Image (cartoon, rainbow, N blue to C red; front, side, top):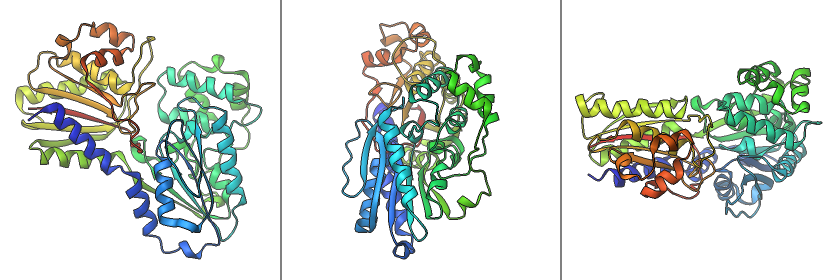
Length: 422
């Protein structure tokens, strides 16, 4: 058994299970009502929106009347009937504003007898920044940066985003009513909460202006917010549409891919390669370095006592951790996960910890993540504690050639973590 080679094969199997093309083709292929609609519009946003749009064109062909999707800058997707707009991510930009406005305009054009297919995947929130006046894009960008730097959860970040936006929190469904809306959703959030994925443009919103302010106050940000954002949240206004609102009578949301499905595929591949596999959880959250050390403790427990699974072992988990930025280094949560774990498995023989994002990106780097074994600390010429303190995991693993680099995967169902013991 070669732990590094096997980890990459297991990750590849997890990515295949999250293939947006197959998911969208299957979801649309099951529908028997497509020809009943006068016109079909296809809209959406996210890191996987381009792949999903190509699949929608394969399934719907000339039945598509018009469409527009916002994708991450650099996505090479090409479509025939659906307009593709490249936008900034994770920091929103003016291209995202224009694309979001175009999507809402198309939804507003749809009427009774029409169908709007909405393709949503991770990253949709940042890719559809349509600030509620008088808030400017720059002010929304600053708010997003503040929350990300504090380690806010995706739930907290989206609660704020939805209440300074004209697009999120069910607003797209509101714009499309009374047309039929089918949301095809690739989940990148723990628990697959529809009102959180992409900030829930087609889902009822349970959050409120009050809960958005609560998230802001949790991190002591109220006085640091741009004035227009603070004033808008404090004064409130028209709330996002809630559960039971009539605008959702014609809305159907379907989760077509998730972290759980990828974990099951990973565990299956591990068994195929000869490992005893165990799925720990698909709902892993928390501070990255703390969660990583918990996984390192599992590796030690397997090595010492054969628990919770005997060797050769592969423990699989998924979710989305958060990093509180303390330094000015280069890295991402999955690289930091591997670095923190490396410090705790130092010296252990035949142990590997692997962590990577299914979208192929990890923070502002070209890596999806990294892997570490019991010799990682000894092999490096850098001080691991200093690198961890400075959030500088990328150069640490680049030097060792232990970065996981996949390029854009066309999908996004959160992160995959592996603890492997030979």
